[in-house]
Image (cartoon, rainbow, N blue to C red):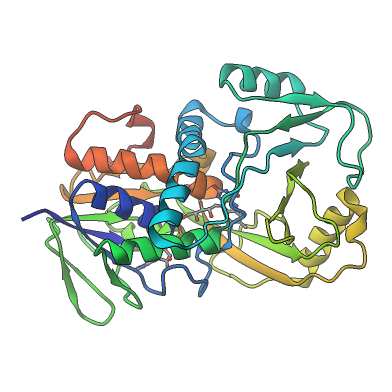
Length: 361
Ligand SMILES: Cc1cc2nc3c(=O)[nH]c(=O)nc-3n(C[C@H](O)[C@H](O)[C@H](O)COP(=O)(O)OP(=O)(O)OC[C@H]3O[C@@H](n4cnc5c(N)ncnc54)[C@H](O)[C@@H]3O)c2cc1C
C-alpha cells in the first residue's frame, strides 16, 4: 500500500505539491479550510498577477533565482499538460516583459547574460506607453504568464481526476506540541490520519505552527490589484518603478500591486485604488476615464529576502514545510513541489536544499 500524505492548504503550492506526489505514486489528501480555486478570505493563489518571473531577478539571491528559474522553464509544459488532461484553460501565454526606466541597466544586463535570458534594449516602445527617454527600456521576450483563477481551477480538476481526496471547508487546528504526528485535529473535532503531513498554508503557516516552529518567519503582506478593460490593450507585461500591468488574452488588463503590512486584513481601500489608478494612467494615458471593473486583494506569505521554507521539521520526523513563497509562489511552486517530494523520498535534491531549511534551536 502506498504512503498517505496529507497536505495542509490548497493554494498553488499545495496543489502543485499534490500533483508532484501523485506522479510519484503517493495517496494524497488536501485539507483546505475554504474551497480550492476560490477567493474567500485572502488566499494568495487566486489573487496573484500570474507573471512567471521574479520582476527584477537581479535583486534576489541565487537560491530564489534557482526556484523561480526552474518555474519559468517548466510552466509551459505543466500548463499544456493541465489543459490537455482536463480540457480547462490555464491562461498561459508568452507575453514578454518590458521594463521601463529607471532601472539598474548594468545589473539587469549582467543578470540576463549570466542566466541566458534573451533581452533587447529598446529606444522606442509601444506608442500607448508614456516614457521619458532617459535610458533604453529592457525587453525580455521569453517571460510568460498564467491566469491564476484559471490555473487553480484546472489544477483542482486535475487533482479530482487523479483521485486526490479534497477535504474542503475543513480547517486544521494549530499544532500545540512537538511529538510524533499520527493524526491532526480539525476545528470540527475530526482526527485526520496520515503517514506524512506537509504544511502549505501560505500566510497562515506561522499561526498553525508557532508552538512547534517558532523560528518560522512568515507574515501576511497584502497586495491590492485593479482590473481594466481597455479599448486597445497592451501586448506585453509592462513594469515600471515597482508597478506592473499585465494584459490578459481576453483584452482585460491588471494593474498593481501594493505591498502592505496590515496583518490579516483583506479589505480593499479607496485610497489605494486611487493611487494604483494614477500610476496606471501615468504609464498608459489611454486608461484615463475608463472604469475599473474589479478591485481585489490577496495575502502573500511574506518572508525576509523572499526565501521560502522547504524543509523537513527537525524534530517531528513526518512533518514537512513548503511555505513562505512571498511574491513569487506561483513561479516557485514547481521547483518547491519537486524539492519537498525529494526530501520526503530521502533522495538527493536537484538543487541545494540548505538555504530553505527550517532552523530550530
Ligand atoms: C496581488 C498579488 C500579486 C501576485 N503576483 C504574483 C505573480 O505575478 N507571480 C508569482 O509568482 N506570484 C505572485 N504572487 C504571489 C503568489 O500569489 C503567492 O506567493 C502564492 O499564491 C502563495 O501560495 P500558497 O499556496 O503558499 O498560499 P495560498 O494561496 O494563500 O494558500 C494557502 C491555503 O491554505 C489554506 N489554509 C490556511 N490555514 C489553513 C488551515 N488551518 N487548515 C486548512 N487550510 C488552511 C488557505 O485557506 C489557503 O487556501 C502575488 C500575490 C498577490 C497577493
